[in-house]
Picture 1 (cartoon, rainbow, N blue to C red):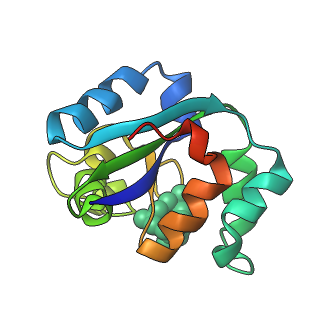
Picture 2: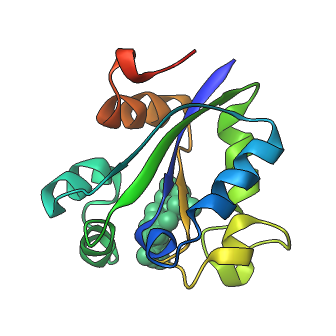
Length: 138
Ligand code: UDP
Ligand code: MG
């Protein structure tokens, strides 16, 4: 069993598409073991995305991610990290495969609907960033 962190990004909350994303998760068989809506400060977004500090998109990305509430969730299952990334699709919605969340709901490479951890190490950091052990419902 593996756990990963998913984020439903601000434009999806704004466009009232949260339920559609959650349906995709549930239909996939991944189990939602934690979920909440939060609004990050700019500083918190910078901490969450610290691995991207210094990249050309870092400032815009963290401004965007702190610009409105997001829904954060912990997903559990066999190979949860790669399964969630496969459901999400490629970073750029224009390049994402048919049927993926980013293809169907993404606006552009920044506003690409969802986030997913990319390794066990990032999942551990990202889950701990948002949730305490008490909030994880195994
Ligand atoms: N991003 C962006 N421009 C880029 C690359 C990435 O705005 O050229 C944003 C996008 O929102 C992406 C996030 O930065 O989801 C993190 O980038 P990463 O390369 O980790 O992509 P992901 O893991 O989300 O597919
Ligand atoms: Mg990433």
